[in-house]
Each structure stands twice: as C-alpha cells, then as structure tokens.
Length: 317
Image (cartoon, rainbow, N blue to C red; front, side):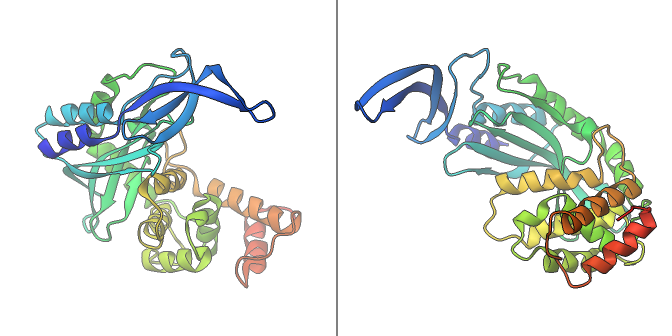
C-alpha cells in the first residue's frame, strides 16, 4: 500500500497556463482569453482546454490514485498493479489488482481488480471499470460489466466518492462477474469464420501487425470446437491477441482495444449480447464493404465464408 501512495506522489501534476496566438504576417502574439494550455510540473505541454472551469476542471492523476488507495485500504486489501502514462502525460491508465479471484469455470481462475483511465487533453474523462486477468494465460480483461463502471467528465470538479464506489462495487461483486462469464460460455456463434469477423468488427485489428493470422492463431488457442465457438472463447481470443500479439503498443492505447472488445460480453445495459445479433451485424457490415466499397478480401476464402454466413442469417446480397 505504501508503494501505491508513493507512486501517486510521483505522478506529474498539471496546471493551467495562458494560450497565445501568433499572427505570422504581423509577427505579433495575442492572448486567447477563452483557452488555457495545460503543462506538467516537469515542463511538458499536455493539452489545450477551455479556460472556464464550468467546462473543464483539471483532475490530477495523483489525486485519483490516492483516493483509489484510500478506498482499497478500507477493505484491508494489499494491492499490486501498474501505471502507464503517455509521453506527453495527456493520458493515464492504471491497473490495480485486489488479490481476489473469480472463476469462469473450475479450471479458469481470474484475478480481479480495478482499471482506471483519465487524461488531460480535453477529450478524456475519468473512468473506473472492473479489470481482470486470466491466470492461465495472463490475458487482460476490462470493462465487461457496465454495472461496475463509474465515470465523470472534466466538466465536473473531481469527485473522490466515485473511487470509493468503484472499489466497493468490484470487491463486492464476484458473483456478478462469474455469472457474466458463465453466460458467455453458453452463447455460440455459427463457426470460427464468424468469430473472426466479429473480432475484426470490434476494430481491434488496428492494434495488430498481422490481424488475420494473429486472430486465427488466437482463435485456434482458445476455441475448443471451431463449429461452435462461444462468446467467451471468442472474447478470450481477442484478449489473447491484444495481450500477447501486439508490439510496442502502450497500455493506455491498448485499453481502448479492450473496451471495444468488451462489447462481446456487454451490450451497454449490463446484459450479455445475443451472438446472432453480433454475428449478423458483423457479416452484414463486412459484406457491404466487399460488395459496395470495393474492399479486397482479407483472407483467401473470405468471400465464400461471407456467402455462407449471409445465407444462414438470411441477408440479401
């Protein structure tokens, strides 16, 4: 716990500074009264925001982490974790592990904790989500139960109570997490090709150097029956690809990919999505890209796979 507080004190602090506009023709500078620049205490510029605190409040990374520490300490938990900050300090991601386990099944223990994201650019708020990691393969998991999501915008002053609410919610909800994962194991997509299309439809391919080979390798590792892949297996294939097949992608960027992927387990109303809906939407969008937008197939048999899946979903070409 001491290390968490020490890390909070080491994080860069940000303060407002004036913004000036340069007229190149006249070589003159004039203050822009409605904008402020944000600078770290070690001299990095990290964003330009509204000068009004009614629209933008600076939320310090150290304050966030300190309040999470206070909330965790109330439960007697000795946390571990890591923090990732972008080079300009405009984005921060923190993973706080609680030393608690849930089980997707008896052979799949998962460590749970809290995922925290914030930023200083004016485009990022403050978000708290359940974060987890599968012990069998170290796959990361984030934001897959919306009941365990808390956030605020920079339009509001920092709300320390949200950290307490988020920590309490995750610590007290192992049954909710286990139920969600069990549900996902009972919902099946049509085949491995549909699983691949669904994964590509989330947009996580942009984090991979070789999207199709990487995702196929991940599906081969995670899917027991290629003719009946479950949502849980498909989700695990995506998390495996993001966790193990990406290179030089920092955590604060990968977290966006994990959130995109979470829609395989979360429809936004704290319910598991219908695999038929996920599959049909992915097939429909991809078929339109090939037929109407002139995209090239992403693998040799993609057109044939799409025709078969369109027939299964009764989608007209």
